[in-house]
Length: 309
Image (tube, rainbow, N blue to C red; front, side, top):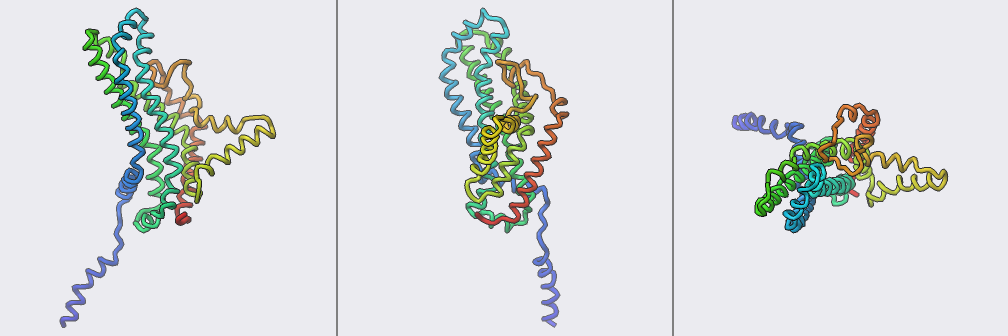
């Protein structure tokens, strides 16, 4: 009798132990993304360090700001605006360049690093699919890093504006005149638009290629990613005396028609006109995104099949 009762009590417990734990897909994606921040803290520490270094240099340079403001009083408004906005454009350009470098280094290390340090054995033991893992890693260059970099640029420029205003007010000049020339929010939107269109969507095949090589190469992923295109370009130059392949690759870095600006201007210039309709209607953009999706699908397949390096 006691044996039957114990058996009846143990049956639900055994069924619970046998039942697999189902984790919602959204929760899997969230923790996969948290993993990337945990393992790659440098993706946000590097732009913060660059911003801090630039602010230190800017703090030294604004000693001469009152003299420059007095010298600008006799110039036309457009010249005044360009001169005042120059350090802000420099800060945005520096952080944009930092974003590009960080993105490329992250993509080339994203899938090879976990095989090299054999942590892939631990992550594969968890109920997280290869698709979720690769998409979480891809979201860093395609979504997280652009937003983080532009946000850091905005905060940096806001601190610059506060420091400059304090110096201008302390010298007896009009702070309102200075503020009228600086439009941080519009500059932030222009920078974000430029980064997302030119350096994310248009450059997407480059990031997809780097992640594919990262999933395939057992050693020296950077060399495997760079040397084949470089060899093709050199052979074309030697055999046919042309540079079509190099120009084709460079096209992904320049942003096509959306990356062309008037001479002497930057994407953050107040006179920049946004043309999202023309950009989204470009056939080359969608072909590039389709190629990127194919690269990421191959990366998922390779991560599923390959073990530690």
